[in-house]
Image (cartoon, helix red, strand yellow):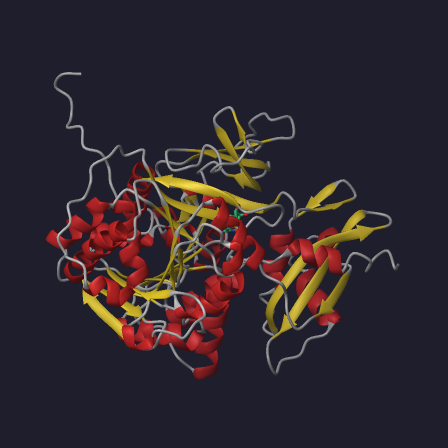
Amino acid sequence: MHGLMMDMQLSIASFITHAEKVHSRARIVSRKPEGGIFSYTYADAAKRVRQAANLLKKLGVKHQDRVATLAWNTHRHYELYFAVSGSGAILHTVNPRLFPEQIIYILNHAEDEVLFVDIQFIPLIEKIKSQLLLLKHIVVLVDKEKMPQSTLPLVCYEELLAAESDRYEWPQFDENTAATLCYTSGTTGHPKGVLYSHRSTVIHAMGSVSLDALGISSATVVLPVVPMFHVNAWGVPYAATASGATLVLPGAGMDGASIFELIDNEKANLLLGVPTVWLALLQYCEREKKTLHSVQEVVIGGSAAPMSMIREFQEKHNAFVIHAWGMTEMSPMGTLNTMNPHMASLSQEERYKLQTKQGRPIYGVELRIVGADGLPMPHDGKSFGRLQVRGPWIAKSYYKHEDRSAWEDGWFDTGDVATVDENGYMNIVDRAKDVIKSGGEWISSIDVENIAVGHPAVAECAVVGVPHPKWDERPLLLVIKKPGQDVTKEQMLEFLADKIVKWWMPDEVLFVTELPHTPTGKLLKRDLRETFKDVYTGH
Ligand code: ADP
């Protein structure tokens, strides 16, 4: 139509070309997998991104080829984020915590010919290489002097990069071109690929930098502990680059001491990650009597943030928890529970209660809950149903996969059960498959878990429904005690008694030394149900 706006296509390369011009002095800090902390500016990064784009061309990577990475959050992985997508290829970030059979499956399914890999994962590749039929180049993300010995024909990223020119003309293409590929861990069946476009990635980043979302600006020092192989570190590398934030990348150091060191050195004020990572950091701080002085906000998602964690960040570290919810199919940002005038007007205790909800949808995401009949249910904070979403950064199918069962009428069914209140606050009740069905009523395993973990002697816990002769299923509470602390079954039940309704009370409490997790840090409840299936039937 005559008189309309310019027809500029959205592109991932534009993030880095913008940062080079506008935020040239802003810094990226990275813990190198081979040791040491490295730092450079966005201007330095932009040059290396162009060198990497030239390197891809030399390796024979063509438009829309998939290029795999098996790598931590580092500056080199960051460079590939822009070089691969920007040059028109598809960045396929592989989660190294998947089972080797799953890694073989997804590398073959995506038909990756080039793999960029951190030194820690070379033994894994050596083990599975014979089954990676299409793989031609294995590029190790390491300094030349630290190249590992291997039976494989490895090449060195730094050595190859040094030989490339830093002049590169970014190609122009349609914004609906595929840019990145991420497989969901898939607790059943093969992992399924979600293919993000340049358009979805750019508008997701624009949506997430806003103050009512992550609030990322040039004053932000952001540390994404969430891995760059898990939904593009929730889009933070793009959002940080768009806004010139200081980007702090923790490399392979996910333990409490390493994360604390980076936060403290760089004065990080915004952290993002899943609850298990924060458990480790908070325990470290408690043990070593350390405080997170610089941290203003901690974004917690991936699993529900327990109130005890929200409280501990606030009261011991003066850090506000932004509870967030999303998923791989959603790029991943869905809802965020940010501070607003209403929350500010509440008492501290009411605030904590509100913060346990997963928040309100960010602009760009629409959500609804539907009942068993598929009809929408009221947003009254009480009715719960299956949570469905739609929006421009939500997948419309899986990559090269038949399964369309999650899509209906233009909505994507998240597999979560939730309530939504009058003000738009969404609260996850449970994953549909983890809800405990007791005598025809539903019990939220997440709610019971999150209250139980508030007991001072509890490090981590899980609640699962296991078969019961009379009630169909009854809750079972599994507890890991904090080192040097003790608590009995009776004390646990007493702690819960005034906090949950009677029929939600676990029939049994068992103490364990570890709990199984998925590759993205969630409790593996299917395994727990299987292991403890006979507890109430007495077989
Ligand atoms: P994967 O299934 O590969 O582990 P996802 O990150 O895509 O990875 O998982 C998305 C799911 O994680 C959601 O559907 C939801 O069940 C759960 N989830 C994410 N954030 C939260 C949260 N804040 N509270 C409760 N559950 C969450």
